[in-house]
Amino acid sequence: MWTRFTERARKAYFFAQESAIGLKENYVSTEHLLLGVFKDPSEQLKFLFVHSGKAIDDVRTEITNQMPRTAPVRKGSEDMALTPRAKRVIDLAYDEARQMQTNYLHDFHLFLGLLREGDGLAGQVLNKIGFNLHESREFLNA
Image 1 (tube, rainbow, N blue to C red):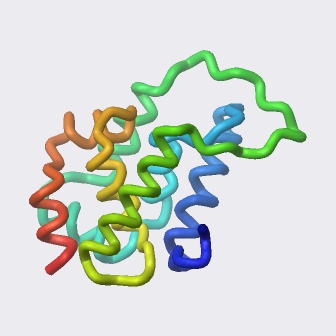
Image 2: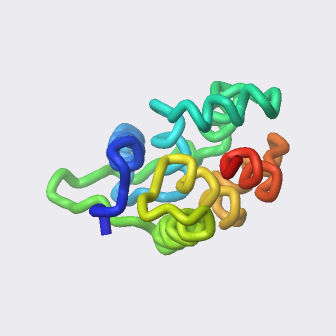
């Protein structure tokens, strides 16, 4: 699965795992993926934010504020599993990459997958802040 991820997309997933571990959670969900994507965003995502007049820090703050405060205690031996919703985001990200006619999944494809999935905490926050899938896709595909 990871062979088609670019280095930045792999880092985003690694940062998502770090985020989940920091919150003492045993899984990677959409909110962790979003935090991972924004830890070291690509120039394309930075330009999208500048173009849209939004700040990456606003998204981080909003996600952090909406995350549950009572996280389960992480057991050190458990693997970091993706939630079904996070798996769907990755599938949607692959679909976005195919639609853009690229063989590799970039961090901005993960962003579009999060926006497209929409029901997870990440998608809800992105929609609340005012991101639009169609406009974001058009900008990133230009």
